Length: 145
Image (spheres, rainbow, N blue to C red):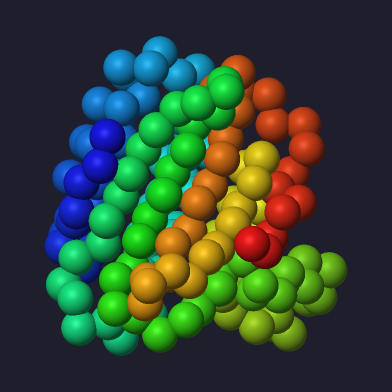
């Protein structure tokens, strides 16, 4: 299933409604659904917050295949930006010394089975794969395309 959403935080409720429809149709286990909600929210809100694209929408496709839930977000007519290459936050540093940001991407890397970026025809395309079995034993290790 594929749909476009306005590039605004107020679209989050519609985005979650769309995701829940897809998850319900595929009978996805709650652990995989939780990972999908977190990942989708993180990538979408980053596209809203940081993209300077003149296009007012973000395309979201949700598919299944080979036992995986596949989330694909496309930020069209945008400058290249690869969120998968964002450095890991220093979780050992004292809170007062930590740089803000990066925790959401860190969570995606550890909840998803893969987290990939491509820059195709002027679009940043982020693809997240999550096993529908809900067992996320191995964190996303493929951070580049």
